[in-house]
Amino acid sequence: YKRQSGNHGMNRSAYTENRSGLQFDPRTKIVLLLLCVISATIASSLLYESVLVFAITVFGCASGKVRRSLFCMAFYGAFYILTLWIRSLEKGVLYTVFTSWLGLFYTVYPCAFLSSIILSTTKVNEFLTAMNKAHIPKKVLIPLAVMLRYIPAVREDWGYIKDAMRLRDVTPSLFGLLKNPAMTVECLYVPLLMTASNTAEELSCAAVTRGIENPKPRTCLLAIRFRGRDLVAIVLAVFILILGFIRERLV
Image (cartoon, rainbow, N blue to C red):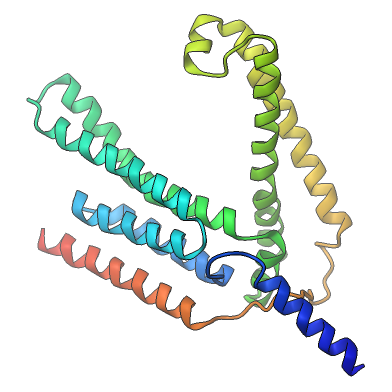
């Protein structure tokens, strides 16, 4: 029994330390996402928005997604420069259209940025274990678990569909849609919708088969618990949110 317990501890340690970067509790990630949504909603200036995006970049690099985080930060920087250029223009139709669109972009982008990091660093079994510890109802837990597995599956099917389109000399882009709209819709959107529908049904059946509706307490080899890094991340997120409220009052 002692030998089995020792091997079990070694397996748990190897399983939890197999990935690069710091491992945050899934409950911490959900709290960070909620705080990010509030911070992006009350953002009153580009400077505060830049601080928020920089904080998300640091979180992504700490989670092991360095390349993705730096790319998203550079993409945001390009739009930041574009916004400064548009602000220097005289007011008119172009100014109004781009200002409205960029306002929506700055509200959604931090949340989408953080969501991509969370989805790429959180496994379904980690999420289920953390949500069970938080006593989340099954009616809420099951759709979220299927959604976490659904997005990567659809992304994989999207790659297969694009490869098949290239074999038929159809470009999966806006230019290809304008050049040959009927063929693009036939080769891209119809297979994607059919695949997405089948994937959703298959994932739901797989989740039920694996006992996701089992009322018994769920067990997991992963050590899901709050650590010091989780506390630091939440405190910094709350601090950024408080800065947003203070700046909004001052403005």
